[in-house]
Image 1 (cartoon, rainbow, N blue to C red):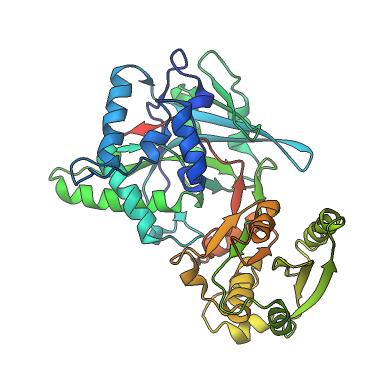
Image 2: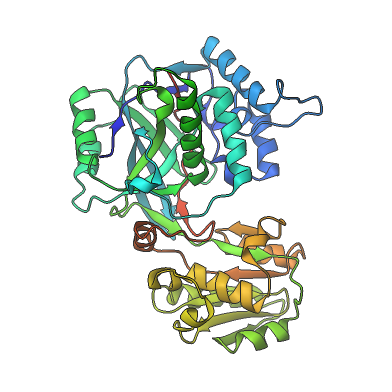
Length: 441
């Protein structure tokens, strides 16, 4: 049984700071340049807590994690950050525009009692990496605080919980901000005990699918396991047994998933003709030549044709920095059974993203996917213009464009206890870090 509960969230004091100057996107999608800009915007930016800077004088006692804890205490003491007087479940609405269509996503933030993955009540869908978990563990240990929410999905085709959330109109306690992508973020608490209990009751039998924040969730599990070994009178209700989580109905139309394109460097044999020759054994290839004047038009044609194949075929875009874009369509998906000798399900083998890694990257480019992140040879982006631009700048050798993963594919893979390659999904819009935080009691 899933257990969620309200909490006394800590929010910025809007009488002392401007929310647009202190909130940030999730730490793991912030570039070094963006990090510097967030530091400059405000001395109270949440960036100083979630993504601190290393200093030459750092040691075990004085480092970016201890500084984050000191900042947190100082800001609370000075009422830059203020804790709520009453526990609540927080409604979080995001208004945005995607492909010319205005959309709104609604969800709620509450505390979830941590569940081991083995229970099947909370399921991941992506792989994680040790280095990121060590960083988040050190921050959690120093601050005993969830600064950002794990983003999760649940299934509610009838929209029972969403209908409850939409009954509550904004009031004077509402926090509002519009980010640099022109996404509006609105947060306000439900402090009514009966409503919180109704939501908790509707959630208790649901399965929770982690969408974003796999490293943070696993870190919370590791921290809980360590802490309960240290406490003699462990009850299971201590603050570290819970994690702050955003819950969104996967059946709601306001949920959007963007593709995550790959840009790769350090390819051993980057010759375009050789790559296309190898690829032709498995893929039908259509090439689009361009010159200086037609490049933009041809790029738009490529993107339209790629998008048109969504849900119909396993099709990918390829660019190696020459005067051609390429569209590659898998001839026969059964080849995955022959070339990927693992016990993965047919659903896993039919994912665009696993076909991309197993065939295009591992076999045709002859680079191992598992080593790309380790050696800093891959970049992920939901923006095809960024992907293609990095190749034009000669920073990377090849851009691989994909269509987005379907929400139902995430559900199917996670339910089967399988994991997709890292960065298989890009749920949009991202949650803002700093809207509300949870400090362990």
